[in-house]
Image: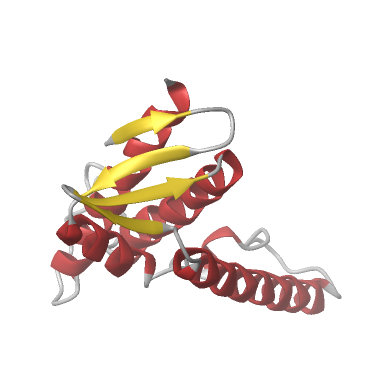
Length: 154
């Protein structure tokens, strides 16, 4: 829940279990499979395979940099501050927008890995041992994503 905001910073109130939940969700970043948003899947013209490989390598490097930056941001002193009623999480506008993108990657990645439930009405839902965890990640990341979006909209 948003406690207060100004031009520089948004401060959210969290319970300790909400912080644990947020950190658990964020541990799964990045989650969207690299093949999900790859180059077109039709006939592969000569030279396209090497371009595809370069694109996937660049994407993997970028995602690894983002993962490290996410960890560093979450560990910054003062990011989570203990208060009487729990914790406060302070984020700047750019950090919030970036965190929304990270949470969206987890939400969409969970959906893709769960077999894109609801994607096509006539396709049966395929459940596996991993499905409940993926559904939890999808819902939990969506919960935090919506809280951040609501704060930006206010």
